[in-house]
Length: 170
Image (cartoon, rainbow, N blue to C red; front, side, top):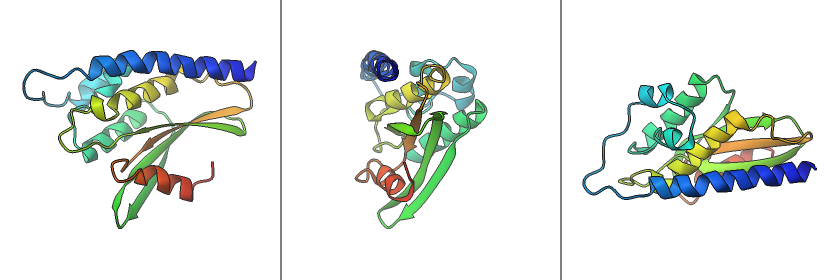
């Protein structure tokens, strides 16, 4: 029954992610619009499409700051995992949902390639994970914990995720 609930949660995630990604990946006809002000996004709903707007059009530092600001604004407890290596630096955020010993890790990177419109560079996945945090508490089976990771420096050979795994017990 527990694995069935987990499978249902994963199917729901897949069901939500595909259409949101398709919608957000449409190319604009002209120059990219400026990013939506953070206060406007924070005042909006917690739909994946709205939450993706936290990142769309922002540079890597702005995207990282926007994710942290959203989590703080919503009062969601999270752990910061800062790192600096020769090849790059950043901050990965971890949010725990549930309290079991078995861990399912879901990951979305918040950095972007310079000039990317954002949705093509994982803003949709970040929006889905942020939305999932707010709705998953009752869906996580007993004995399980879902760790949502928002990693930095993915564009540098998955650096944020690699450092997190090296330094943090799962």
